[in-house]
Length: 428
Image 1 (tube, rainbow, N blue to C red):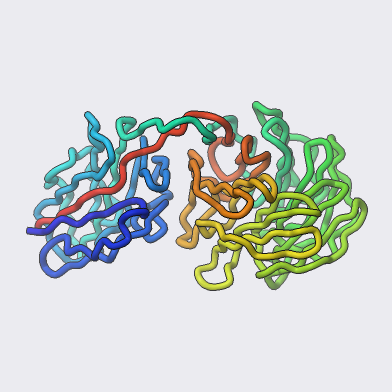
Image 2: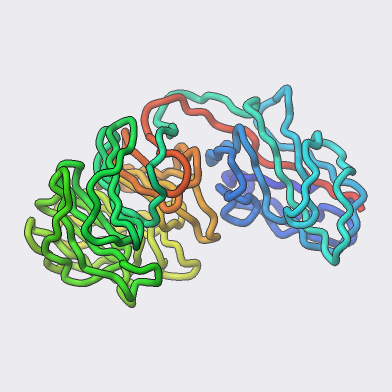
């Protein structure tokens, strides 16, 4: 017979959980701590549909684990009991796989489970999938949350965008189609194409006047990066003065009169910043550490950049944040979540960062809010977004791109989930 092991889906109060001996035969599970959005390997965020809020838990949807065991044993039964902060009338049911997710038994009630399939193999590879209902959700007040709305007419890869929740322009994201589309406040519609098809480009401005800069014209790598700049008149794109240097996946912010383009890659990861004066680009001060897929917001007088790839040390997604004062960059408080291919918007006093993927290559839904000096985690996106496109402000934002519906950030009722983890015992 085994002993109970505790597994929690968020950190906060459980940093000192010892590595539990969850069953006999001297089979020990690795320590499971610090797990917001599965950062340390417990939650399979790609196959988890339930929304997660740090310091609370998961709500309505599927909570799927990664492989919890990869051991040579012959279990007789599995006992599962969830951990939650509330009492629910209908508890989550549990699906079990012992072959790493290839075959599942579904709809088991919590408690002792014996009807898992016979698995003839060298190793027993346990995964759990909890079907969490609305009974685990509670409202904790009003505030800003994400809500789904109309999808983009196509799914771009590393496109660029600018604007507000009332009017947004997204462009690029393909090496074969120079696509652009426009958000009216309620739906998307295609509009005039870029002159050059490219992905991994940056952009800034509004739906009336915008810039697109840099990118890549092939699907290979940053060696094929370009310095192309195009200007949007409100109805069409026109090629204008190129960047000083070609760059793939830089960041950008500002307007058609005054803009910044920073970072990116062109054979190497760049720290270069270029400044647009309305008709041409000029290089200016570099920032802390070269990286691509940076998100930025602000103006040529006051800007913020965050995240990207790579970081200053392994693993490779970055949590770095740098602030521009009009003449020089300075590092500041880091993101709570390392990420790249994320979205963001706002300014140096208040900004949002959302979506992307993490250092475990897991898609993430978490959102962080910048106070002017530090980042704090807030309500997550409803769906995974990678790559994510952001526009708007810290109070009214738009997240598009990736797969699934576009999401709007705005006032609403904050609902949190209380499915916080599970107890598990294996009898063999």
